[in-house]
Length: 508
Image (cartoon, rainbow, N blue to C red):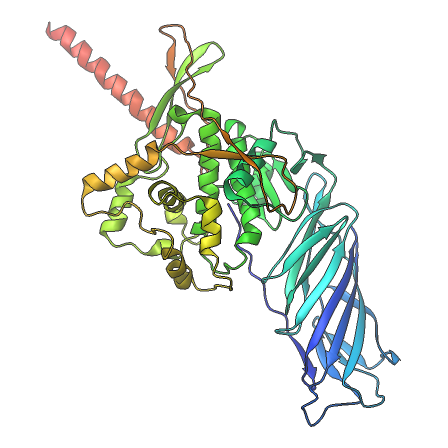
């Protein structure tokens, strides 16, 4: 699951008008932030008022920021006022000139936000001139990862994150000291073989991130549900993950799901819409392939198909396990018959009544592309990139429809509909694992992974029904309620058969 982040624009007004740039130097400590903003001001030489001997401007400062000093090329500026997170400045008078430099020194006395077990974050809103360059550096000695908004790009060097773009933005860094692996840094726990999730995610998408590791907060159910939506198993936000610590066999698939969200963050920078079917579809697809590799085809859940039933050996006893299909095929059929449209705008937060259906449909779009159009995620990213920001759900749908079938398996015939879904579920998917990956790598070496069909030997007569409460959907939805319904159905079916047998015995 990826949480939607909305950023409010910050306004800076400068008189007289002209091209301007801003550079930020931010030292983000644990208890306070020291920040310098350097404003390079220019007036338009074609303007009758240019050159000038004085500039006046209003400048937004971050929440809780305290102005320490302001100076220009003539020295300290005393003519300024601060109100409602905005500073009004008049530069020192002097000779008529076409440019001026204003430096604002600020401090924020606020503790960093604690995420979990030694993992912290700092997020700061930064003002900029509309359409003009904004850049800077934010540092912390234990920096792990970060994020910038509004079409900004970032890069990392040691304990610093550099960023650049145009206009205003928001920056966030994640820092702390956890348990390091090659690709992740875990806070509270060290899972087994997490590199597999990362390497399959990179191998399938062809993407890498700019920083060394993703920080991952492993949280018990009480802490998780107190800070993240309770229907999810994991969440990606701004360069970091929060995950449940009790996922067991589903941990690596869910970790891969969140990793793809993290890799998509830069690749899908152009997507500023509220719909997430593309991001969730690619993440669900990779998650399913990790499950396929780990469990084998006979234990992997179908997509808009039949439930999967298999046997599992636990502590000397063989159990029958039922994994419900991801998505109800009848509901998909009805969606097409009713000419449904909501998937164009779908995201899991705004459409809770269609949450499970939306995840399954999003994955179906990607799987259909791979199966029936012979594509791969690596090719799809290049094909879909419009090279410009897209803010309309409708425009995004139209752009994607040039490369993807956005109504996969939609046929007038139910037989053709079922055959299409069957083909997608039975397809021999290729799974690739990246080798020796490093951050920001473009040429990625991959190798194929085998899908093992696991055959296990059991003692005869030891088959029991199992309520596999550790199974979770890729979107994080708990299957407990579905399993309870199945258990009750099995119970009443067995009870009915017993009554029939007893009745038959009496009659005989």
